[in-house]
Length: 356
Image 1 (cartoon, one colour):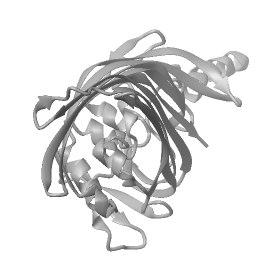
Image 2 (tube, one colour):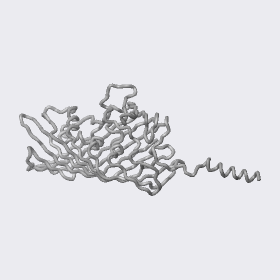
Image 3 (spheres, one colour):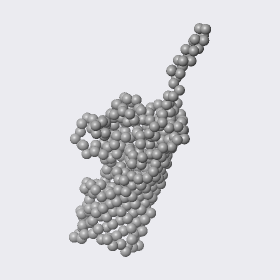
Image 4 (cartoon, one colour):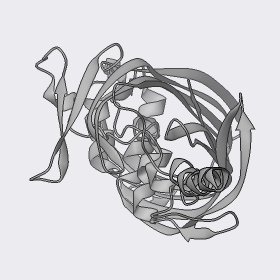
């Protein structure tokens, strides 16, 4: 009789100790308060010129150049995020250290016109004043936005203006619990935080020669600038499987997206040119207009650490196309001229993230 009662007590107690409905595989953002994560993002893009059109003063130039051009860019961003306090599904207070910020663009150009050939190669390096600094993001419940502040305080508010808090790829997660094999739609407008994590990191070219200025190169280096236009398209995620990495359970999410964005880059390029040091013979050079159309079709995999409650790794890549329409006004040796370029480029773009 006593033995039966012990069995009965155990039968009643065990379900309470080990509940059957604990969502052990729930995919959501929930890092422990006080924890930190070091994140390394890399964005690589390779473009080649497919077509070039040239006009002067509104008339198609009779001397259309035969031009070959390639652009290869790599941007590396390393940050350490400290989750000081959390709210549901996002940080309430986050301290971010910008450990490393920079990019490099390699341009190779060969042009033939009127029997003459000219080649030009250049490496352009970018850097940011944010490197080495700490920024604290604090959620303002009343305004439903993050306040940004340097720690310690600095008088460089312009660097904070377009920073984004989300460098956790939360936009890719399902809104609720999902089972293996389930698919969900991803809001395309939120993908800027994935394709340009951290927002505008103020990475600017160190040096720029007149030829790059004339072709609008200052406005081509920032994915964040491109994506602050009208993002359109479709995107989805699928809970593919569970795997173990280093003894920890990870959710594998398959991500696909087709996006397009159109952007007027005139003001951005004009601002970049204000800081350029042009030789006297270049004359006065101003931007009349610069517009881009960007298309990207990517697929990849987000690996989510279920125990840590944040991303473990991300790899996402695919074909991309860039069309650029721009015009520059030149004043040199007493003459005024407007030169307009139309450039169509294609290639591949890839994004990776590794979290320690």
